[in-house]
Image (cartoon, rainbow over all chains, first blue to last red; front, side, top):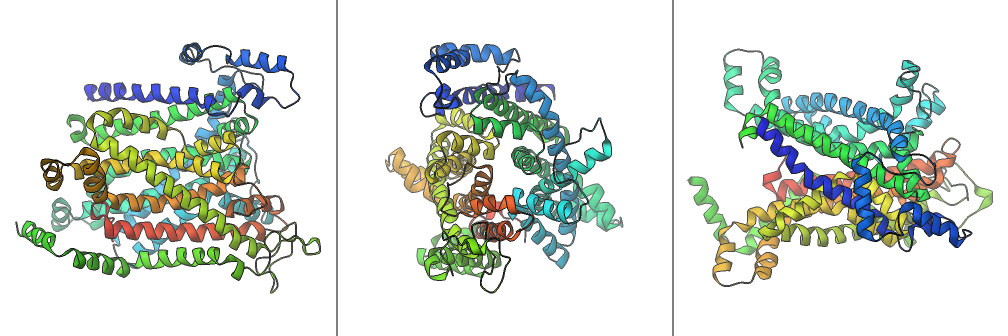
Length: 314
Length: 295
C-alpha cells in the first residue's frame, strides 16, 4: 500500500509542474502588453511602466518564471492589482464558500445518484428504470445557470421561501447559511446527479449478473440484502471513477452557480478578476482550483487502492 | 471458440452488407431516432430561420416592450420590443454554428494530439501528462479566461471552447488508438512496408473513429451549454446578433416582470442538448459496444 501511495504521489509531480507552468504562461496569451491592457487608455506611460515593474514584466522570461516559482512555493501568490491586497489572502477568504458549495452538491449527488442508480438497476427495463434514466438525462441537459435563474424567480421572488442570493457565514447563523446555500446546492446537484446515477446503474447491472450474487440469492437471502451487502460494494470502483471525473465539473459548476446567486466565493473572485484583467488573481485562483482538482483525484485514486486490492498490486 | 469462428465469418462478410447492418441498427435505435429528431427539428428551424421566424429578430418596437406570450408573439417580447420567438429561432443559427465549429476544431486537434500520443510511444507520456495538467483547470473557467482575454467575438468563443474540450477528446482518441495499434492488420500493413503516417491515418485512426464520433456528439452539447454560460458572464458572442445564451443574458434583468425572455431560450438550449445527449447515447450503444451502457 505504501509503495502505491508513493508511486501515485510521485506521478503527480510532473502534472503539478505543468499546471503551474500553464498558469504562469496565461499572461502571455494576452494580445499586446498585459499592463496596458489592465490600465485604461488614459494611463500615462509612467503608470504603465510602474505596473510592468510591479508585475515583473520588465524582466526576461526565465527570470520571471524563476521568481514565480520561488514565490508560489513559499505560498506567496503576489498582490492583486485591483484589490490592492495579497492574492493568497483573498483566495483563502473565499475558498471555504466554494468548497462548501461543491462539497454539499457532491454529497447529495453521490447519495441520491447511487440510490437512484441502484433502484434503476434493480428494476432493470421496467418503468422505474426507464423513468429514473429519463430524469438523469434531463438533469444532464439543463443549463445550470438558467436553472438557477428559474429557481430564484420561483422560490425567492414568487414564493418568498428562500433568499435570492447572498451569503450568510455558517459561523454566524446556521439556519441562515443553510437557507443561503439551499438553492445553489440544489442547482449544482441536479446537473451532476445524472452522471453518478448512470454510472451506478451500469456498474450494478454488471455486478448483479455475477455468480456470487446468484449464489447469495439462491441460498435464500432477501434480494435487498444481497443488493446492498454483496452487489453495491463491488460496484463502488466505477462509481468512484465518475466521482473523480465530476469533481472538475463540480468546481466549474460552482463557479457559474456562485455568479448566479451572488455567493462571494472563489469563482466570483476569479471571474471578476478575468473581467477586470487582474492577472495575479486570475493566475492564483486558477492554480488553486487546479491543485484542488488534482488533490481530489489523488484521493480518489488512493480510495481505489483501499477498496480494490487489485489496484494496489497492479 | 464458437464465438471466435462466428466473428471470423462476420469479418469475411462483404463490406456493403456490414454497412447495411450498421445502418439498420442505427435506424432501429430509439435514442438515435428521438435525439436525432429533436436535433433535426432545431437545425431545420435555424437553417430556414428567415422563412420560419414571424418577425425580424433585430427590429425593436418600443410600443411592444416586454409583452407576455400571446397570439401575435408566441414567446412574448423583450425590453426592446423584439419578438422572442424570432430571436430564439435566429439564435439557434449562431449557437449551432458555434457548436459545429467547436466540434470541427476539437475533432481535428483531439485526433491529431490523441492519435500521435497513442501511436508514437515516445510521445505518449509527455503529451498525456500535458493533457492531464490541462484538464485540471475547470473547462468552463478556462473558456471564460480565454474568451475574455482574446476579446468577445464568435471566433474567439470557438477557440476558447475548442481549447476547453480538446484534452478529454485527445484522451479518448489515444485510448482507442492504443487498442487498434496492436491489431493484426496494422502489423500486416507495417510488414507490407507502409509508412507510419499512412498506418496512423488510414489504418489506425479510421478504425478508432467510433468513440470519437460519440465524444464529438457530447462536445456539441457541451459547446451549446458553454456558449450560454459565456454569454451570461458577458464574454460570449457580442450583440446584436442573437444566440441562445445572449438572449438569456439580456432577459436576466427583467427576470421578474418578464420571465418569458429568459425561459424560452433556456428551453431551446435544453431541447437541443437533450437531443444531442440522446443521440450520443444511441450512437455509443450502436457504434461502440465496448462502452455500451446496459439497456
